[in-house]
Length: 428
Ligand SMILES: [Zn+2]
Image 1 (cartoon, rainbow, N blue to C red):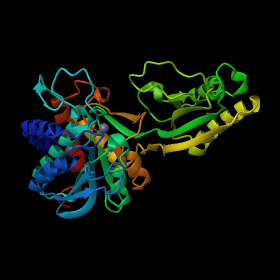
Image 2 (image 1 turned 180 degrees about the vertical axis):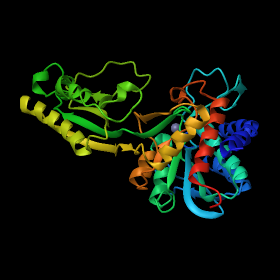
Image 3 (image 1 turned 180 degrees about the horizontal axis):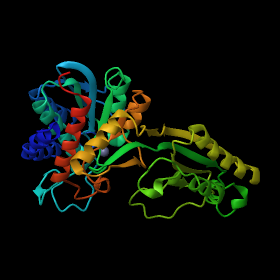
Image 4 (image 1 turned 120 degrees about the vertical axis):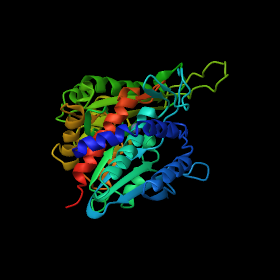
């Protein structure tokens, strides 16, 4: 029997184990924010993976954003060395889940199995993927105990809030250095027949227009920051947004609408603060002396961050040239560079071949409109051989009644196990 067939059998035999493991993980409510039960889930994974022959290390991201006595940022890195020297394949999953929200018809942390689906917060994003990678590794180790190289499995904190207490912290401490890890698979829910090569970049900034307060009955004595911002927004509509819409990318971003530069105005605030809840009086008449927007600019591998920032500065300067007294400030908040792994990189080729073998289908190559932990592995870890591949339907992430299909988890576990067989050959 071929190794692919033996791995397939070994995973089918673990189907109930895969379901139970997913349920156990979902029943630990690792909500972020604020970052609950991170130590509990690491301890659970420690027990499980130690029993499977992994050496486990629990790492607290001391001093990372959000870390403290109330909500410590715990991570686990588990490693299983083979009998011979070779490369290391690392499966990285985030253990945190987003808030529950409204509209559920099942218990969000009950992990109920119904009609071949497991329901609950974090089933699809991404405890189902984590469970699939563990079952894949265990089935591979049982089937090919003489493998060369190493398997690593990490469960990391805070991906949903930027990954600074998780993958970024580990990457800064060498856990993703190319000398230690050669291949990274992040089992985010991108569908079992798609390989995600990377993601667009991000720039967040706050733009403030300045004004001068005066009595609202004599607005000519003041200078309205809101009217100045109105001019900025008009300029943005007229010139900047059409410019961005015209920037197309070779990145295979899905959905199709995100295959270009985009800019979202996240919020706008100007003038008097919102009244406190319960206040029933009237506002006071004032000219707004400040107005602020937060922009969320998503950019392409073809664009540089300086160009992205420069376009916004140029827009502000065009407005200034036309408006007497116009003053503004741009405050940088956050940036992430785009990341895209080469389609010919070894982990991509192996995963594509495994998908063809297991699913009898040519995989689709995609990129994500938003970012995920690949940014840290690429920029801090300097590791370019990284993809996201895992079971689940991305659209269900963060939704009520989130679920993962058991068949999809089984299929993607078979793909992951076959990738291990190809990258970590036995004997030799
Ligand atoms: Zn996720």
